[in-house]
Length: 369
Ligand SMILES: Cc1ncc(COP(=O)(O)O)c(C=O)c1O
Image (tube, rainbow, N blue to C red; front, side, top):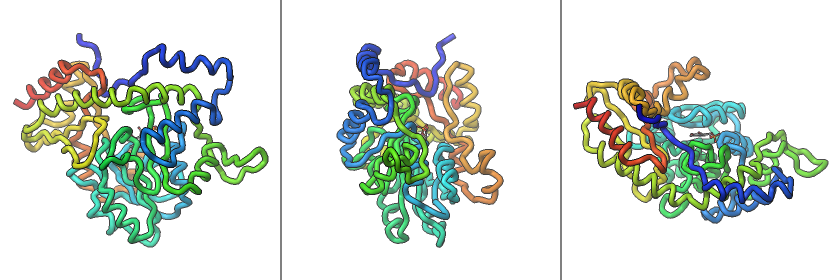
């Protein structure tokens, strides 16, 4: 039996590199609370991303939750149902109401033609998601936000290392968040960051991630605890040394998939977007059963029988999950539902051998002959 191939595999720095890095922590015994590595990692990330303002967080979810809290929003927030539940939970946990906008068939991000009709007197912000690292229509979203005086917070969890016309994808909007979860292109085991425009907003964020503590005796915000510790900051510094290599290796895997699966009627791959330097975080494939005569679920099961674990991502879409379906049962989101029911993300990670990619594709192609 072949070894299991999972949808992803975490990137690790060389063992000695990391253990050398963490040795001094036994001397300093300073493990968290804005330690030396935290400061160094934050500085290096700003340089790498060419951004002015960035605040490290304990994970991508808390980055989003606190980014929203620091905006002091109210009422409704327009977002996409085709995302990881974290996006919507972060809105709801801030006491706000998510309003779902359907996605575009082109790149599975929010359909900008459908945003305006959802804006009401109560709308205070838009939270778009660069799903699978596909860049949203930033220009159109920006124009709408200006027209209606709305804040824009991008869930850029999937975009580490990506550029849009030379700028980091995660540098757009009033704020953007990143995830450094173990399954991401770049990881600190668990971790994340908020990238933001206004310095004043940054002061709020810094307070919020440490219980709202401003100084020893002043606590002026109902904050949380979202600090990144020294061990994970050290992991970030080590992994950052290898990020370009990581993305290059993923590129080869993605290109091999693309070569083997393109031009097949009924198999839809995402297009390469103009002006985008990709990070190859995911390889989502739409299996159009009306053309192929087989379902996405059948492909998923067949691969699983061969010890290959693809992922139905994002399925179910958020408005169909147990915790939201009652409230949103009358929502009409046909494109989201179609994509969610037909999509499968195939295994991709830096060290996935091209022979394995060929094997995965052969299993799929044999099914649709
Ligand atoms: C789109 C999206 N948003 C938010 C998150 C939350 O990030 P984290 O897992 O770092 O908390 C994820 C994580 O996987 C995600 O995929």
